[in-house]
Image (cartoon, rainbow, N blue to C red; front, side, top):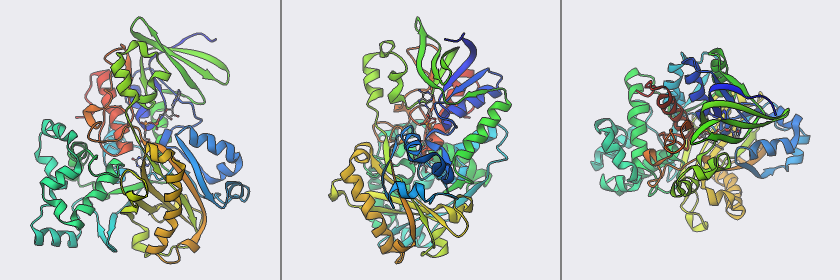
Length: 507
Ligand SMILES: Cc1cc2nc3c(=O)[nH]c(=O)nc-3n(C[C@H](O)[C@H](O)[C@H](O)COP(=O)(O)OP(=O)(O)OC[C@H]3O[C@@H](n4cnc5c(N)ncnc54)[C@H](O)[C@@H]3O)c2cc1C
């Protein structure tokens, strides 16, 4: 065993939440070490090139996916053929669908401002919309509103736009009280549920933000907090123009760029190193015990920040340091998963405008097939927005189809959505099935670490500072944070860095 090397703070995990806190601490002059089990940063927002998958093979790919709670449910053709024929070469794949909220103008931009920007990261914005009864409605983007929705609102007298504007007139205390109010209850109270088109439109947006299919479980307080604090200031700055977008060359580029920034501030990162234990002396953290290819190592620090999903905390630190009911509650916090397929297409059979959009539909497969609620879908032709992710002349289709954790682990239910997807796309765009060169049916059972449901959202999540072990902190999408998944993880890193330094990074 090697000698202890000392740091001011150690971050376990190079997910976007861990990187956010590490970079802010390094910028403040702290001696920081990030320890990551994988060979690259990004965690669930990792990227890899198709040729890397072809070179390293199926077992490597499966292990990489498994480390981020994801498995291959099916493929077309079979995976051996996909790999042996190098069908993924020229594509860039994330773990699954990875759009950035508001094309990075939410908390991601707040963080980037704090570290003086990431000039080497390029983002490509996309407009979003939803299909309802065969008609396409556009999402509100910045100040742009679909004229048809506006007309319906005017004719019916239903103030559906209050979804987008109410948050700005509410105090933070009032918004916190709404954490336990569902989107459905809120929409009922506003009379919005009386109109199918308006309700469906807002339901689509709410699931996009929360990853939860059931409108009775989506926390309205979480959405309002996100609107008020992540979007409000950007509306004033005039930088909020898109609902979503993609990081050029895959979402992992963002994390790679943040690592370079952190290293520029003097921070260090250790890859291929798995933390086995958080070391505690008395009731204070003392450092970590790490497994590396060179054997076991100890690193000392008075502050340790866990970026590992909070449910797995007790694999790293003995539960005896915490009250039993806190351990039980934390272990039982539930996330949300997703069927997140990729398809390589040889032609586009939809109108160009629709190929460039994120398109949502509240019912890919109905609840009656055995699901908790109707299964929603949002799909994009990612390469129509960012051509860098597909080879010339080819196209990359990606979709996000929320499933709760149990559904995502249930092979029978997963098979139903896998079988349904090509049929659904064919019904929308005849000729779609013929355009498929290959299809990878990835399923993640923890897209969202803690679902932003009425029983778990916002202040109900794990606090960034442990009340029970001195020097222990949490950052990531399972710790206190708000809004869309990556943004939620990033802002939790900002909240955590504020708590550690006493400097307010989340003004
Ligand atoms: C299929 C899929 C689709 C998604 N789509 C979107 C989307 O469209 N938009 C969006 O905003 N978000 C999306 N997300 C969610 C988003 O990726 C996550 O919310 C976010 O990346 C979580 O970041 P984090 O920092 O909380 O944790 P993680 O990314 O889980 O980071 C934790 C890190 O810790 C490392 N680690 C774990 N244990 C150890 C250990 N013992 N020692 C060392 N290292 C360890 C892991 O390897 C990982 O790098 C998606 C996720 C998935 C899986």
